[in-house]
Image 1: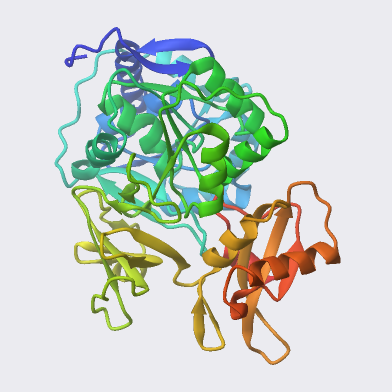
Image 2 (image 1 turned 180 degrees about the horizontal axis):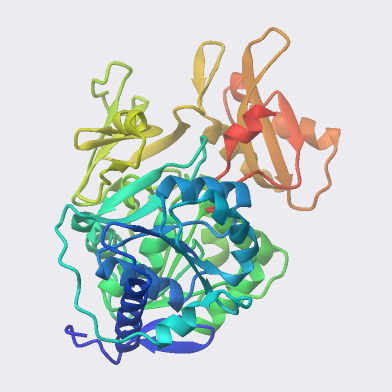
Length: 495
């Protein structure tokens, strides 16, 4: 409110508008309410909430009193929640009513969890979030914190195994807004942003909360499942100027449009993508259909947000783009020495948004956080003029006949076929025990056949070196994914 934004729209949610003054007061109420539950500085509070003004209020209210919000996916199992709540030692959990049935039975296993507060309509005997917020004061002095105090935690997405809590500090929390929000998006108070990625996800938290609120823009929150027709309807109704998606959501939206779904993207000036590499065919089909470029980028929960991105007016499809001002990168070989341009190696990133490390995971922290540098686990090459090209994960690369093969390259070729909606390529042993590419394919119309499988193999052979084609094609109804939309290739490998 000190910036003169008190009466400007901060949040749009289910047809209603909250001003910056409304948000500030709700944040203060949330902070006071959490203090009334006994939550103290540095103690963790778990958020299991759908995207909503409640999420924003509780997240920022916890930070304002020096507590540490831990955002958890709303799409997990009770087994997952038992692990995560025990791992972060949450003192308080704020839980959507739809998830209470999964969380309530776990309390006997969680000695640190003292309070569960329910957003929505709780059963008798459970505290309602709206009631404790209504009873709390809207005036709150911020807890004095230092730049090196813990600000919030988010769990890594789990594409390669058990999630790890990433510790972000107060000093770096606003950096994504000041770098990506300024240099890539050019966000202003006139913008309206809409993110398919949810707030519990590092990408979504920055898209829908940190970046727009930093720049005085309006955030459009959508609590429902990101079904393509519902997303198109929300875009038509709310008229966002900036749209954030992940490659999976762009593919689903494009497929729906190609099948006749109504859409109106005339308000959108920028489309942003992250989470995993955006294949060139998907970029080209999106641009041909909607007349909009997608600015693909690469970041991670550990880095805090996107560090490398394409920029409007100089997009190079099939790449992750260039360094955002404020970040540095290097591609290194097996010895850790920097590699020359166009050589494929491990991507390291250094920048001001980097996390402190992982909670209670010292060995993993040492592997990933190497001094000021983050070892991303991504294989990359960088061109002479600074464009970064993704070659898959370090643990996803395949060595076929002694030659490295990027699953992403094979996936991009498959996606050029008109019948393919999504695909993932992993390694599989042949009869000789040698690794060869194997493809799991989701079709647009579900018309799987051995004839089509042969056609797809030949289709890839025509586009890539012969040794890269998938020896096996398996048609599946869907690909296993994390709650943030990333394909879990380790599950496919385990088959």
